[in-house]
Image (cartoon, rainbow, N blue to C red; front, side, top):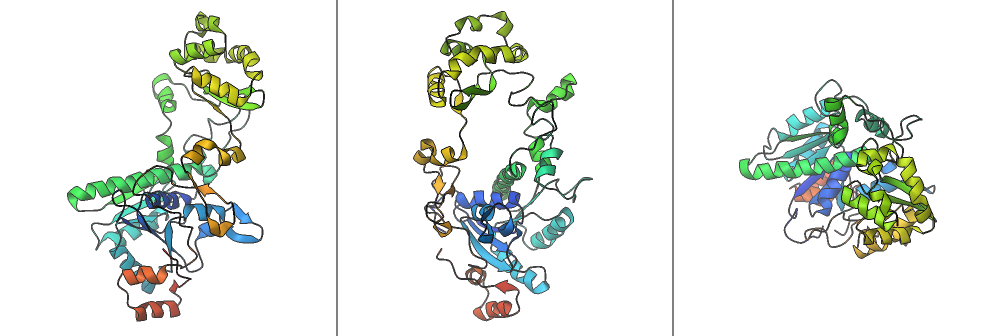
Length: 404
């Protein structure tokens, strides 16, 4: 894996994840310059079959896996046996961080075994509910993660059932927290020389992002409810509004932004109307405000509206379709997209989500099963004869070696 000096360069990470949260945490560390080795069973990770699949002709090739495993090396190892655990220990001996997504009891047992002889090792254990408490070990899914953290309850039409946000969003947020937790533990290790267990539960990570929804209950006795595409309770306009060719998002919660918005829409009298004096008052009459805005907005396209409002310092963005996101000039200018050639001509995927000098200089596609098994075990000090013996016994899988 190539990368410039500094940042995460030189950091060695073992990714034992079988769920999105841990896999995404490892991907973030890889795109920051760490050497990340994915350790999966000899038959392949469960993530390799996670929908969406790339095509019906490739029923075992997952778009999610290709994304989550980019910039990683691949080791195929069955560490459920004593022999396999011994081989895994050799890899742990040469690692700074190990990431797991095991059930609570297994994660705690793994932590005791892995860190007993490796006090400097950082173990990040990502799960839905954490490793302690009455819910530790409960089964979960993308939907239950969304529900348990309160976000399902506040999303959707207020007159209908709760609505889940798209995809495994809670798992990705937990993955971000896991990567941050790993870096915090590594920072502490500089002072103490010791690693630690980083226990990340998606439920509490999501709950920590509620902002004032929790304070509304604890200090005002009010429960936040669904408000469709509006911000709810306290702010307007912070919502979607129709224009001639689609939708725009306009966010003008502050008084200065409200005044600028009224001037921009050629409605200066609304800025001085006492009925619209505060964001909360404006929410109570949101229908009237939107109706008065409609004449200006519906006469213009998304781009015209956004450029006009930005000129008045009002936060606004067009609501882009996915094909528009893929071709958006801002992301192109930022060189955001990666191009995984093994998946076909013209295929794109999200690349490095930040600009960092230590990030890899070129794209590295997700590894085939066992692509780097021999190389990783050789670096860990196993002799060729030992590697051949492990392969013959089926403990490891030796795929075609990668070029990294």
